[in-house]
Length: 221
Image (tube, rainbow, N blue to C red; front, top):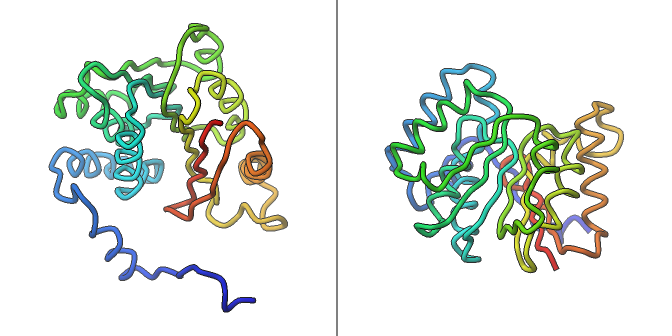
């Protein structure tokens, strides 16, 4: 059976090869944002990888995204990638709770010339989602915040996603601890349960991709 499994274990050299063979690798604004985020120490691990950012950018462009929503913005790398994919009149709604981290995001959105496309709402995401205009609609959603709240974010956002719109979740492999019996941590349990739910949810089609720490890729039916 193992002869038919199509995957490749990465070492640092092979990962660097994959990471470096993509469009936009020398983007000065994205590079500067990553460098400033790196000064935050252990918290810098919250930032998505470079290839994830390019993946989000391409997907958002591919489906003609005009309205997008992000739960969990941190220093703004993912938001910057998505905002760049939007047309001049496109809008990205970003939800986060930290003013200090998102102040870094604001600076780089300005430098990249996309600040007018981004609306940042500071506060608990669930409370903000519960106050969305009933007529709101989104083409694209990226969720990368409190793992125990992922399902709550999903259930609130899905009704606002148009048919064939996308919802992406980050950290859906949770460092390998998502496997049954590997961790009893509340985050691992929440992600494990959501992966199982999404796989049989008749409202969407999904595939769990082994990009970075795992991206669950969902298309609304």
